[in-house]
Amino acid sequence: MRISVIGCGYLGAVHAAAMASIGHEVVGVDVDVKKIDMLSRGEAPFFEPGLQEILTEGIASGRLSFTSDLAAASGAQVHFIGVGTPQQKEGSAADLTYVDAAIDGLRPFLRAGDVVAGKSTVPVGTAARLAERIAPTGATLVWNPEFLREGWAVQDTVDPDRLVAGIPAGAAGERAASILRAVYHPAVAKDTPFIVTDYATAELVKVAANAFLATKISFINAMAEIAEVTGADVTQLADAIGHDVRIGRRFLGAGIGFGGGCLPKDIRAFAARAEELGRGESVSFLREVDAINLRRRERAVQLTVDALGGSVFTKRITVLGAAFKPHSDDVRDSPALDVAVRLHGLGASVTITDPAAIPNARRLHPHLNYVTDRDDALRDADAVLLVTEWDEYRRELSPEHAATLTTGRVAIDGRNGWDAAAWRAAGWAYYGMGRP
Ligand code: NAD
Image (cartoon, rainbow, N blue to C red):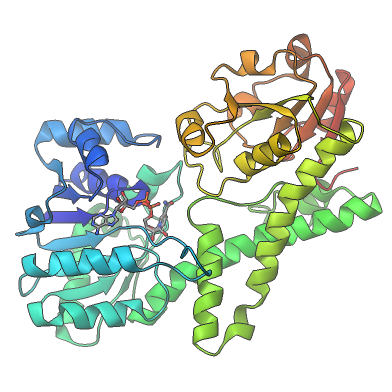
């Protein structure tokens, strides 16, 4: 099938390459010429495991190409929209200007029978509005939200745990759904749940999923706050409640909270949209979820200040991790980087290391100190903070080895990823989140 993918960021570039990897002929389109140049040369513009391989294969096969010219979308049967929907500069609602621009730009190249498949995360009601805009072309809009996890994006795109298609009522909608089934043929052949619904449900599925995940994280972080004033251990609490299959242990890791280009802006946009719909109170808890989440960053900073005797001024602090999570170089709203910036603001001499995210972090905060090699970063530190659970820091860094490099013996475990007993046994003053 001939496919276009409009917007080649974390979602779109992976989607384009993954669609080529399952046999489609794909053109990726983006307004960012630098990104397009890199992709055209077969270079992944960001770190995502497995992307480089399918990009190289796709380009070599001749099935995958990239351009900044939207006219190249002409002739494709399915057009995926994967442009950004960031938080508005003023306010917490989603900024839909990129989605609107992509649809308007694509309109002249649409033919009757084409399918436009929206993948960007949008406020409920957007698809119905966009469908009206493309109606005169005879193309059909489906809303096909994306659930990929950065770090597992290639696998999640090729082999998703479910597919959702929001379609309009009538024959054109049914036809579009069957075209989408053909696009995702390997997943459909494996009986991956393929849920066909209306536009509003499809849009809500995505934001509801992210709202639930964010709530689960903030729930356990709220328990961490209570643990901190009672002497309880939130990690044991999480283990114990997680054995209940109705609750489950996943996403119950207390720490410095969630970040990235999705969860924070998606819960804010959802709350803003609910208010527009006169149902603000239905999801007002999301404001609390957000507030709990942001408080944890401050908690990690305070823990560090306390551990270093009441001030971090001129103290050498090594921050392990800059990306918002491991296996990614994404630093958008990264709690790790936020903690580092705050400590720097308090006068600490902060050194940040990360296996993949240093270039992105440096672009955002050029005044901070970055060191690529983990051991070099640890050398002479007064305190060490674990803020992103890369294996290099969480599993592969032994407290004994760390102690050969640092001056101080203060370990702040912002992800509760280290074995507290092992670090203490090696002579460290260990501080976890929500742990005694
Ligand atoms: P991103 O910022 O990495 O990529 C967006 C891309 O769109 C950029 O490369 C930008 O240049 C391009 N763009 C903007 N306007 C354009 C236009 N008019 N024509 C062509 N290209 C244009 O963002 P992302 O993380 O890929 O997210 C994209 C969307 O997917 C968002 O709505 C996001 O919420 C959603 N989403 C993201 C993820 C994720 O893990 N990143 C997962 C699920 C859903």
